[in-house]
Amino acid sequence: MAEQNNSMSSMASEICNQIQSVFTQGETEERTVLEILVEEIASAAGRNGRIFFYACGREGLMLKALCMRLAHLGLSVHVVADMTTPPISSNDLLVASAGPGGISTVDAICGVARSNGARVLFLTAQPKSESATKYATVIGFIPAQTMADDHQPQQQSSTRQLLPMGSLFEGVMFVLFEMVVFRLAEVLGQTPEAIRARHTNLE
Image 1 (cartoon, rainbow, N blue to C red):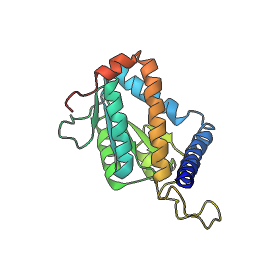
Image 2: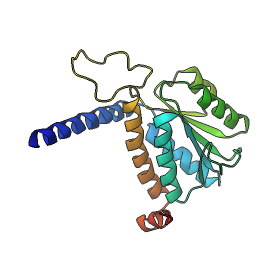
Image 3: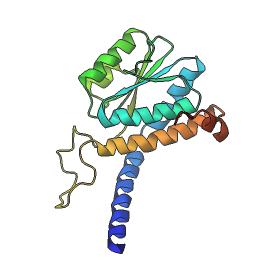
Image 4: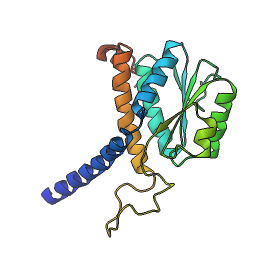
């Protein structure tokens, strides 16, 4: 049992170190993705805009988790494709994510948002991709491995990668979004009690 626990702890530590290394790389940017997210979301709230979220697969799950916490902060937030999602307009913000650079469904939704005057915050590991440059009002660069580059071994090793495909990108998203919620709570003056009071009681 002790060996199993040590192995589990070692794996967790390696994963956390990989996630931390992405944030270290990101700090060299003129504006970090954390600053961009906080500024864009706070700005949308300040103009009484709504915030919409869309991504595919596991990236979509990470954005749904962020959407939930922003609702707890008292913001008007919506996941694209929910039955109650309203139309997007010029006051609003769409936060979309396509780690590998471009996905047809993400592109289509970003295009609709832009055609209706909304701002589009595009999260990606490929900031020079056509999707990012064509649809984004602002790009949030997350320099993590995705399916676009997971076939290129980062180091010569006989051991299996702990985070295959886009798992590193998605793990970074989770940690990043927790930081975003923390910063926004300060910016918006939200107390832990007020945030907790907005959690659903229909459970």
